[in-house]
Image (cartoon, rainbow over all chains, first blue to last red):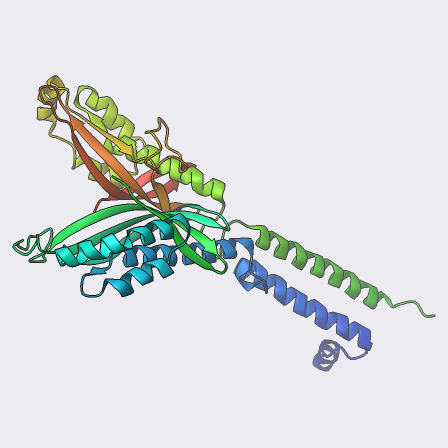
Amino acid sequence: MAGELLKRASLAGWSRPEKAIAAAIVLVTAAIVAVLVGGARVLPWQTGAEVRIDRQDQVRSAATAGVLAFLDVDYHDMEARMKRVQALSTGTFKKEYASTAVDLKAAAEQAQAVSVGTVKHVAINRLTAQQAIVLVTASNVVSNSDTAATKATTECPHAGARCDQYRFVVTVSRVGSRWLLSDLAGVS
Amino acid sequence: MTRPGPRLVVLSSVLVVAVATLGLLGWRAARDDVAPGGQLTSSGQRASIMAEAARVTTLAMSWRAASSDADIAAAKAVMTKRMAAAYDATLPEAGGRAAQAKQKVAVTAVVAPLTSATSQPETCTPQLCSVALLSASAERAVALLFVNQTASATGTTNTVVSPTWEIVTLVKRHGDWLLDEMVAP
């Protein structure tokens, strides 16, 4: 009895095409189970939803990097910082920033300004293949010639500095394979 | 030419059905707007959640002393029990509301326009207002909103405008999005 079962299970007596089709059925069934359990994740190609999630991550990174670069000021070395902002931006924003660069550098040096920003939240309002609108909240610690006598408080525990909070609407545009800052507006 | 045996015919039929099933499942998974991990990626679904986030946030953050009972009831109608309990703790004492009603104390919250060129819309949509999503699944969404709150009362010449942001968590209950948590900076 057991020998008979083993004989059947070993497909003895099956022709070569029958064995090949049986093997294919096993493989396809395993693939069906994988798709049922794992969903789109197990597909050998990237789905539309996965592409959009990747795009969201890229847009968040670009917006974060752009805002941090924009808030990064140090009168000792403005050139490198301004170059970084320009490298991360495009379009109207890049042109406008470039046109104010000389004044910005002079103002930072005159005020002996140092500013370090922290991005707190990055949320996506709208996203297409070429452009995204993102809301960004950020805090900024600024020290300059006017803040030297400022005392630390609970809200701003940095002696000699001022703490600011910003609400930004950031537009990020796709240029080639990169996402770059194309507009940055503070919301009052 | 010999005819294929019955076993070969059955196996071939099973294989065709299995391949068709796999193709259908793969096609459906590829077309799904829900990414692995449950995040919604459809712009329509996301826009609808953002509009709802704006609506319930302004309801929860607005308050007129003259119609406080109705305003509180309207706000609680869009909240989970957990959020309603937290909301109660922020309300003025019931005893003081009559005096505030005489002074016509009112707190009005609006979601800031998305651009300076946009005037304050009556109804907020993500195209017009500063609302965006940090995450969104079919049952839970977290939104960021830029909110401007205005406080006013008779006898005062100045209204106080407080720009702030809110992180709100919405949860789906019986088909409706309810406010489950609000966090300000």
